[in-house]
Amino acid sequence: MESSWEAVLSVVASVTQILGVDVMALILLVNKLLCLSSCRAECAKLKERVTELEALNQLSAGGDPHVQSVIDDANDAVDAYNGSSVFRVIWSSRRLESEMVQKRRRVKLCVSGLIHAGVAASWATPQP
Image (cartoon, rainbow, N blue to C red):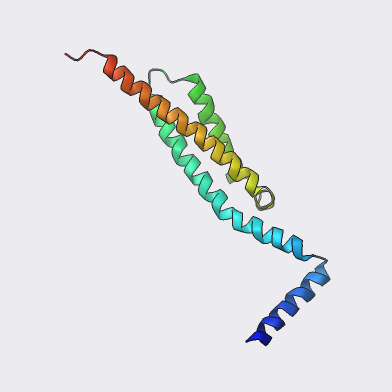
């Protein structure tokens, strides 16, 4: 069994030497490829939260311009990720993921703010 692994590693080492790729570059590339799935998941979560926020913002009286700017910013991030080339996504996946997490947190804060504002308004309205 050990000899088959040695053979595989030998072939990989030969190919990387021919291509001029060192081990660190291969490790970094594999790491970035593994980040793609988490970046895709963050993009999907962000889109889901933005959809919720859009619905809540439409229900509020006239919509809040600050909330609309958060919605537009998050939609731009989702569109940029979906329209990105594979090369850009691979090489900037960690940064894209952290940006989407930050934007999702802002959207989540807006959602909870609109919900609390709606609850407060319903409590303040006298019941017949």
